[in-house]
Length: 446
Image (cartoon, rainbow, N blue to C red; front, side, top):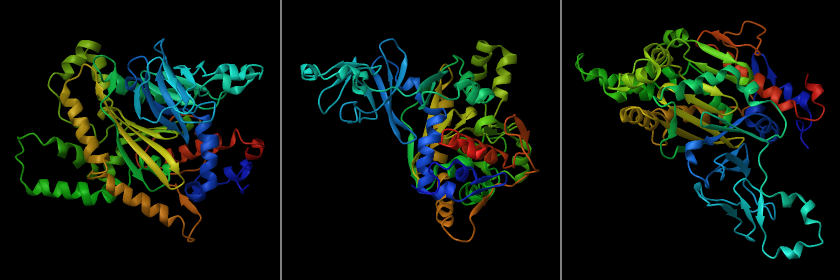
């Protein structure tokens, strides 16, 4: 047993109002505690229900380090089950997705289960007669996670059987998800193809931190976005000719500090927050013919203008996803180890909207987030340098003090200067609480 296991006071001491200890990013024991406590007690994104559109469709992923299956049952409800047979522990599904029909069948001993997890049949079941098998845990079948909630197509799970409710955990932060869905004239999204998947040799929290770090784009991305802007300016593009979509996407990354200061950051309780309160890098995209007409027809001109006028940049849903409402994107930061993170970047189709919107979204994803992207490699370089640098003995602490003015109440919504690091402090406030609340002797952390 290490120094942090069953020691909530030691874990809580890693987070101070203006700084966090480097062990939160590099310590293997802390990583294991995150999997056991943080990812168990919070609501974690699983998938979108359009990935399992028909009965028997399933999708495999993980919540923290726990393998799970999202599956559509015969009653059309979405279930999230642990991906293991209750017999010998064999993974039931190894394909990323598919249709299992009316039941799952274990490939080892052919135990079968309904798509809600209930045990359906066992070969030679008479061998369990007089063994009190029906009283065993295995007789219950594939175990469901603690709780599941489908919010307008987005499926979240809480591994713990008891804990904070979905509504209490997310609160008003759901307005970002709602805005992304409302941008569809039909009020519905669909996943558009498989995600771009990109392995990062760094701690998962570095990616989450970066989503609301507005002081890095004009520095870290100068080599990519900066070069693109210089080349475009040198081409003397005619002012009366529409700017290429690629330049509309990449040029705003080189906006000055003042642009990011003025756009603002909003934080909500439990570690959620977003950049782009007043405007964002997505505010000035060219209009798509026919889109506003379709929105006006559905919502009326006033409501449509309200929906489309909301151009939030990055919304972080703690612990590990980010969405971009104006560009219909979700990035899932899946922890694979203390220094390894799998990033999945999904894009969504606005049902009822012109195809040009999806084309722009797909271009954004390829340019910014793909393993072959222009911009993403800048961030990856910084993450890996930081992961290496934190092992140095130069300092034990990471500073998150920008625009810190003393005690902050993270239990209330706040809107501040767009370059504040309050959202990072907000995330670690939530990290500390959810890490320690289920640990033995948790009163010691109070």
